[in-house]
Structures are given as structure tokens and as C-alpha cells.
View 1 (cartoon, rainbow, N blue to C red):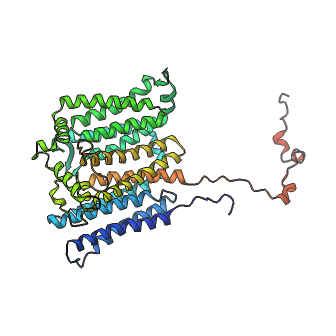
View 2 (view 1 turned 90 degrees about the vertical axis):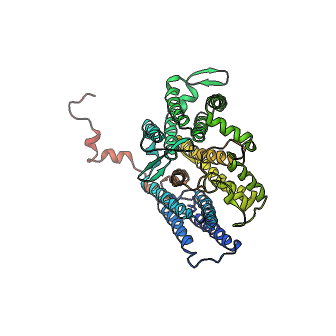
Length: 473
């Protein structure tokens, strides 16, 4: 091997093979749905899989050209989950006579175009570290948009949507990325100060107020806006993200303990004085006390139970009985048709994405990359944990979306941008650092040694080493 040549494999061929497998999972699910329902496969069945394949191969080409050493597992896992989501949307359309799968495919096209744009435009993610306060103000501006009188659009008691020219968008999806960047940028510059500077009490270190107050203001402002909007799922997401990023930056368990205590106090206060949260908690604890109000929770539970271990099969269940089966309760619909095994397989795909994101954080060579990869991975974890936990009644139900599965353009766009940022960090972390070592020819070593006396005797060198006339000794 030539000296100085990178030894790290790029992994692009492995990624391509995994992408073909991930694409094939979606196509096979589409075929099985038609066959299990006893329907003739239409002559134009290949149009959807072909478009989906072009989109997948297109983003792979961008990764191959721009991020040669990016992680080869993240993108195939995201494509596999998105493909399963497409199949479920198609299966629901067959039963309901709707065309949501077309909107889902358009949303995926927009999200994957944004994925490619980030990879092309963002040559070095570290430039984003320069603007922590600007990023915070931008993220807070996105959170405030649903409160505006004209474009704000309240839905189900929550003001989390805006409508512009007939199109709806959820600004909190963009805000979670921007505020993650803001937290990572601020903590990367001040992690050592937060960890070491300040008064100590036993094993605990209390940071100085001038270092902690700006971060608390960032978090409190975002949290107050989210609580005022009745968007407690996103509020929980930001709270967990804030505490975990502080723990990663300072390596102090006291932040986690303090965060849990603070979360408990805030949750009790909000529950006590907010009727919206009281309804959610009551539906969680006693869903059968009000069947009309909690119909989606009850039907979701029955759907999961009827699916059993291996499910009814694609197209053989009754997921249309579950309200919001294409959005909030899509995991319950999938569990009915694929069973507990299928749902766990999807959760494992999310786990692979998060695990590879955290591995990229461990391999990153500077603190901003570590914090950014950790923060984005936590965003995925907290979303999946909150929504799947709500559907299975492990937690009270929240309004978060299931990444890549649920129908929703703003969610798809934001999550594909998260994948792009994770891929960018992994590329910088995995690419080899080439050290240019001097090559010494042992046979010609004597001729390479310079005699200092010969240099000093050289007339061309003498004027540069002699002192000028009249200069002091």
C-alpha cells in the first residue's frame, strides 16, 4: 500500500446493497397487500416503486459524490422505515378510497431533495457553530409563528400549525433542528466552564450564573411558548433534549437528576392548572371510562392485541377502525398487520439509526460535532419513545409524529434534514486523517545531508547572515 493512502473503506457499496434491500422491502409489502386482498395487480403497479427507486438511488449518488466516508447504515435504515410507511399509506388508501400515498410520496420527494441540498450546500457543518444566539432567535421565531393571528391554525386544542396559501406547516419541526444546533454551539464553547468553573459541594459542581443563565433563558423561552400552545409533546422533547445535551457536555450525572426533579415539578404544576393535560392523563389511566372520547386509544389497543405476535398480514387486518391510523396511530395499524415482531423490527431500524449517530458522535474530532450528533440522535429517540409509548399506553398520548412513517410533509422534511446532518458529521468523523510523512532514501541519505559550513561560505547566503556595517555587535 502506498504511504499516505487512506485505509478507511468508504462503505458506499455496502450502502448501495442495503438500499436495494430496503427498497425491496417496500415493494414486497406492496405486492403482498394486493395478493392478500385478492386484488389484481394493476398494469401501472411499477410506477410507484420506480419513482421511489429513482429517489433512493438519487440520494445515494449525492452521498457517493459529496460524502464518501459517511456512515453506510443510516440512510438504508431511514429508507426502509419510509418504505414501510408508504406501504401502510397505500394499504389504507385501498380500504378508504383515499390517495394519501401520493401526498406521502411527494413529501418524501421534498424531504429527500432537502437531504441532498444540505449535503451539497453544507461543505463543513462546523460553520454553524458560529451563531448560537442567532440560531436561538431563529428557532424561537419558528415556535412563535402558530401564535400569529392570521396564519396560526389551532387544531385539536393545540396551536402548532400555520397555514400559508392553502398549505399547512408545523414550525416546531424546523425549530427542533435549529434549537439543537443552538444548544450544541453554545455548549461546545462553554462545556469546560460549565463542568469546572463554579462552586463545588461534594461531588457536585454548580456552574457560574453568567455561564448558565443564557442557556436557561434559551430553554425557558422555548418551553413557555410550547406550553402556551398546548404542545406538550414537543415541550417534553425539548426538555429531554436540553437535559441530555447538558449531561453529554459536562459529564455530570447531577444534571440528569436535577432535570428529572425539575421535570416532575413542572409536570405537576402543568397538570394542576391545565385542563388539556388533565384530559390526556385521564385518558391514559382510564380510557374505558369515556369510550366516545378515547375511541382512538381503545381501538389502537385492540388492533395491537388482534395483531398478536406475527400479525394478520399485509392487507388482512382492519386498521381503518383505528382513528388517525395514517398519522398518530400508524404504529398501532402496523402492529395489527405485522404483529409485535414487525413493530419491534421497525423499532430496531430506529435503534440502528440512533446507534450509528451516537457512534459518529464518539468518533467526532471536536466537541461541536459530538454534541450535534448526540442531540440529533436524541431527537429521534425521544420522538419514537413518546409516540410509540403513547400508542401502547406506556405514556400519556402526545402529538408527536413517528419519523418517516406518519403522514405529514413538515415532519418528513425535518427528519430528512436530521439524517443529512448526521451523515455530514459521520463523514467528517470517519474520513482518514492523512499524515504526510517524509520519505527517506537510505542509499542517497549522505547526499541529502547539508553541510552548514558550505552554506555559510556561499556568497549568495552571506549577505543574509552577515551583520550590516555600523550595526551593533
